[in-house]
Length: 126
Image 1 (cartoon, one colour):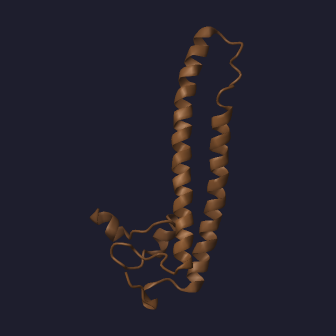
Image 2 (cartoon, helix red, strand yellow):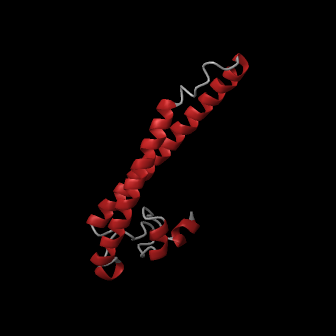
Image 3 (cartoon, rainbow, N blue to C red):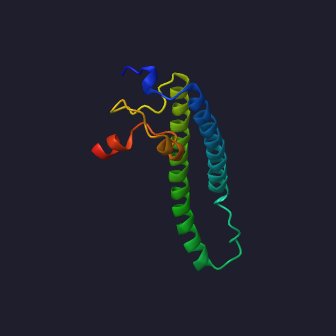
């Protein structure tokens, strides 16, 4: 896809998106650490001295929360990877260009979903 200077965001706009994305990566990394530490600490919820029945329920829910945490961690890692890929697109000035239509993705959409690679038009075609 050939991107001309009329069909891309200005360097100033790209710099603004970069700040937004770096901020989101920092928050996402922090959230990932919280998810991972919750996962590591799941095995001890202070139920060692409670009734055996409660302990059985606790172990069942522990397995479920480990799976849920694992899924959360996987999603969070993908989100971070997508954000880092967006930074690469900013560097090569292809950021904000729909990979299907070649048109600029709406500024407001990118503020909400800064790692978007599809315009609403292309998303609706899927």
